[in-house]
Length: 424
Image (cartoon, rainbow, N blue to C red; front, side, top):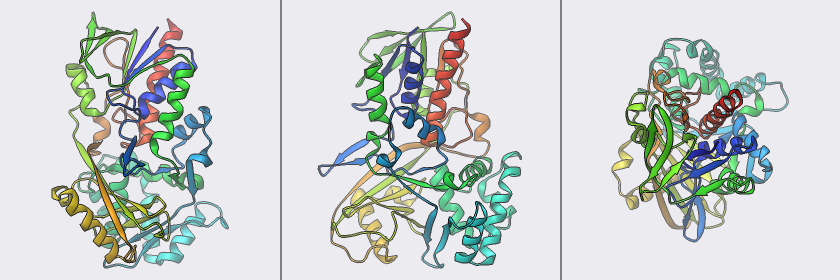
């Protein structure tokens, strides 16, 4: 029974790998010229960069397990660093979260937070993390309302929780789901290695896309790039085939739609059971400076500025990430590059380096909006049409739009297919 997978992002790749492991024939189609979806390679100035800077954390267990099963060596692909985060603000002292291996977790995090930030901030941070579990099970409210309810100070909201919410949910705290944010906190701080940063050493396309592509081809799976699916063929409430925009019919016993929410809704039409979802952008500004420029740490947080997170990519290349909506979207690329570079100079993150060139990547539909009650509106994996399954990060799971959520949903679709095949 052949399974057609529409979408070659991390979710579709995860589904393909897990199906092929069980001997299920797979045909994966992708409209772009390469695999990876919104986490793919881009060539700029004769070097390979990412279509938006990504950061994985140790809590991404399903993603790490998938890579391990594909023969990937974590130490080759990622720089794993213990939690050590500094967030700058123009009007406040630096806020720091760090761990020490000298004490058991989470006592080590608590003691270090106290030492670095003082007792008042320590109490507030501890209170919110402690209250995350009951909030996860409560009626959903906005992150902003939850923070005020838990008596978080204006400084802590602006300097810590707002940038963390934007980084993980890509949604402003006034709209973001407190239940989803609470679950992110619980997962991240569940154990010491879950809070580790995994900073890619290689371009994203050389991680899961490259390993999965080799595996799919080695197992006899088929990959078709530059292939856009225009419509689905459904007869007697059973999926039978998909039609490309060039008029080609691809027959299949099962189809997994592993595309972004916008494309999935277009393909499914009335069969889309979730509410119509909206999206928010993510902008990444690459700044190529002189090769001797090096930040004090691989990742630095900024608050109270347009810039939110700065990554040191080595050899003078900096990647500045701006999540969610904002006035920066109205600036031209040249204006934004100058603005971001000036902010880094003003905050002393860089010291008057030789600026060579800049590049802006705008992912207009980077993620779905993780708004209040979003969890109740996310569709399930199994569709009402027999043989039709949904993947991609929008499908119901405990995470916002993350690579981990995409992998989880891809594997879930594969598991359902194999379960039904086993029964039949």
